[in-house]
Figure 1 (cartoon, helix red, strand yellow):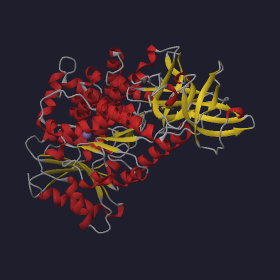
Figure 2: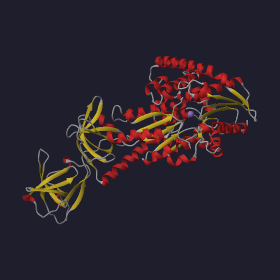
Figure 3: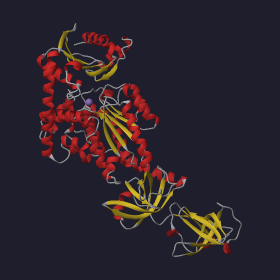
Figure 4: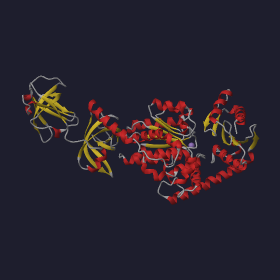
Length: 611
Ligand code: MN
């Protein structure tokens, strides 16, 4: 039998709408419900019609398949159907006439009605409409659906659903928005197809470009795949509107690392659409009190993340730890993140403990490839930031030099990063900026100070304000340091150890000003710097201690502080020893009543270390 219109039964494909239905054609549908005047038939998610009871040929139950011919499409969109019962027929799927529009193309469709397929990345109920944030492979935009002021529209649509949205593209306050006419959660098969398409495309889009590092570095070259992994995951989080929480060590190096990534990420968020303030609520930077990710930190982060999830329908965040995160002290916090399934990335240059890796989806650390802490977090952070968003390179290329100076890097890379910015920033400028960061962070306590920090780092486009602010902060910091040194230097005690090292000891609790700048760690560091100059050519260790802590710095003595801490912990029963840090810069905690035992044990180990 020849195929003719009469023998073809059409099946409406995903997202087909009224425009795809033609009068006179036969369609397969599903019985949706009954009224006393007839039977409602669903032709696809968005299209339904009515078979008047006079046109019903057979008995039906709900959800039965039914073949219908279209008698008339009325101007109000109602469709009149007639049941048909052909014995032999072919089915064909109708693909919709309205092609899906990419979110990144909405700017060219203002005033038009479009179909979007994407993932629901956020559902925010306002006092007016419900705002669905949609993500597809090209970008992020909001769709506003209104039923009644403050009432949740489409309550069946959940975070993470793959949906088809039809609506008109509007522009409000310079922001694109879709005024929703309909949202449909796609069926399993269609959702899987769209999800796969978006995932594949996003995966490709998230792949960082490959270009050379700012400076030549063997260690960075070997770290490149791990750095690309971190950069790719950051990009993907941005493209899928997953919030990022960036936690970092609260010193100049940690700040430089974190701010480099902050610049890259916030610019990328603004570029990829969505709310005008998305760069604020999708990216949070927070300095950590301790030199590791504490339980206090993760508890705060989880508290905010879970509330944002419930109140603003946000996804749970990805956590990025910088200049932090590599040691077993981080494990309790990492385990808490694991309970909530939060992915965690670490970019650190502290001596890593292998145990952390089971909790991480990415870990960049120079020790993994034979490098050391001389490759600072700021260097790593800046290079990763360039991978995340190359457009910010010119703004951030001076940050590694500041970080290297701030963290006293002795790696060859330090000079190279200084060299590439030497036109604009001298070594002294970098030293001043690093000191200004440390000083300002002390007053910021554990706030990020996003905009103030940008001024200190000359990222606000206000060079004069930057210059004046840094000058002011450096004067304040130096005055405070001088006062502190006047007070403490007369109380430094020298012991010459068996290996010839000069050990300088200072009780920072009773001989230093407390609760002001410089804090005990930096006070000891300043003391150390002065002694190193005075005793040039001699191995020098400076030990600043309080009732239950000690901070150590060394020049010319080959110590391994994390290992010494582990040994002391075993040897001094009831000492409560823990701590860590870098090989030759570190801090140790213990219980107050065991201070003399711990300090003497520590001094014995320093006295045995090779010079
Ligand atoms: Mn550091």
